[in-house]
Structure formats: C-alpha cells, structure tokens
Image (cartoon, rainbow over all chains, first blue to last red; front, side):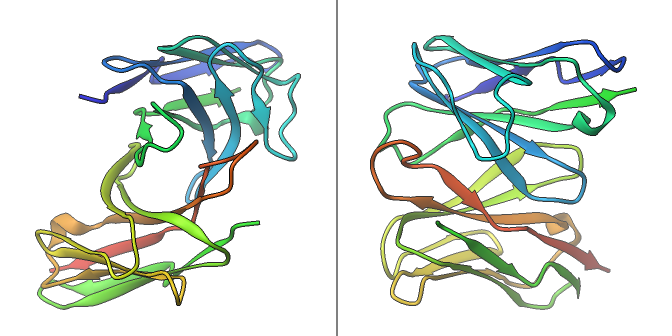
Length: 116
Length: 115
C-alpha cells in the first residue's frame, strides 16, 4: 500500500516550452501533496505544498507563475514548469500524505527534467 | 525556522566497520525521519522516530532520537557494500497552520562502503 507514482519518469524539452509532471497516489487519498526539487548531489528542497481543492502554498523564492501546481483531486497533483529554461533542469520529486497528523509522507519515484 | 544539519556529508568506510551519522535540528520537531537514496532514484523510507529515546533497528542500521539534545543518529554496524547510498535525515515541524507538518531535510551523507 501507499504507492505514489509520477509521470513521466524523465523528460527532455527545448528551452521555452512547458512541461507537465503528474503525481498520483494509487491506493490512498492524499489530502496534501508536496513538490520537491533536487539538484545533482544536493538535498531535497521543498517547492510547494498543495492541498486538494485549494491553492498551493509556495516556499520563498519559488516563482508561482513559473511552477504551476494543481491539486484537483485527492489522488492527483500536477506540476507544470512553464517556459522552461536550462536552469530548471533538475530531479522533481512529489510526496503525498493522508491526514495532516499522519506520520509518513510517501514519495514518488521522481521525474528527471532536462531542458536543452 | 527549522534547520537540519547532518554530518559527515561524505563517509568512506571499509566493509565490516561501524560508524555513526549525526543529525541535529534547530527547533522543536515532532518527528524525525531517515531516508536512503540510491543514485538516480527517489527516497526510500528507513525509519520514523516519534518520541524521545526512540530506537529502531533494521538489519545493520539503527536509528535513535534524543529530543532534548535535538539529535538523531543513524548507526551502521558491520557495513557491507550494499549499504552504499546517500542517507538523509528530515525533521518535521510541529506547528499548525500554513506550512505545518512539512519536512526539512539535511544535506545528506554520501556513504561509500569499500571492500
């Protein structure tokens, strides 16, 4: 149980295009999903927190208009990188949890984005 | 603001040896987590520590938590090559409201176990 999937697992795109990454909780309802970014050999940095049916809360320094997050259902959140540039190339990982007090966040397998 | 510091950041050890990774956090946290990450992969949950004095063990790994010292340790016993990976600790903030129950990660410890 508690499986989180991400799609695609990797994507290569040209500079200036937009890329959508999906995060799904397969066997549980996720009231909250988190989006992280990880640069090579670095730690995970929280980008935003999304709660189903409401606007995402972005961390300081993360551009809301560039990283669009939608959490339209209890099993799906999407991250759209708009007008991607090479500096957006990174490993994007989502996680999901059920209730706020629940101990665990369940992590997806990650999406490797390369912007040429 | 919750901050998490791990040390060492790099650890090269011989098979069969023991070592400890340390994780300090700056303010009150109600949960402490340890994860493993293999190259190109996402995080694998190892331990969740819930209270002061908590100790959990799985195979050659043992994690402990001292909430008074704001310190968690991950002890590796008789290391084997398969344990080579990057290990992250993360602390969960405990306040309510916006940003509640978020995880703050340490920088990670890259462990290399040498035959």
